[in-house]
Amino acid sequence: QVQLVESGGGLVQPGGSLRLSCAASGFTFTAYFMNWVRQAPGKGPEWVSKIKFDGGTTWYSDSVKGRFTVSRDNAKNTLYLEMNSLKPEDTALYYCARGRPIDYWGQGTQVTVSS
Image (tube, rainbow, N blue to C red; front, side, top):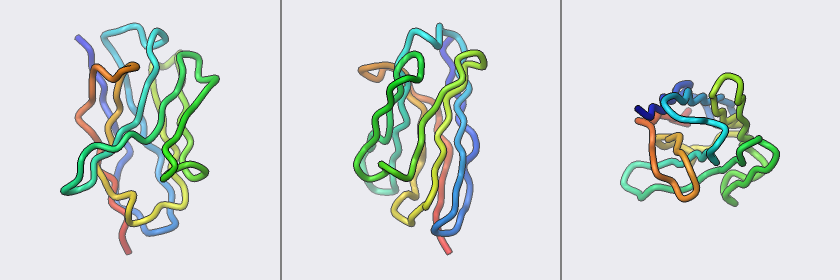
């Protein structure tokens, strides 16, 4: 069955960095766009970033553009999100999500930005 397992979250100070990973299994990874979506406490889901099948094209929300970088390693069936210059407002549960439109989500990894 489809599995998306996120990791790499944690507590970081403002201005710090984190790298999230998402291990995918149970489907043909190279056949799908992949996304990162986040949900802050008390708010609805917010789409963060998307990457094309071969990793050649990426998209970002305005709130993270220039600070976050999405990438994928198709040989390892893994999606990444490099997050730099983190702000308290980046605090959220970060989900890896499959497809365009999104049809499957992982369980999420918590990112907390606080001093």
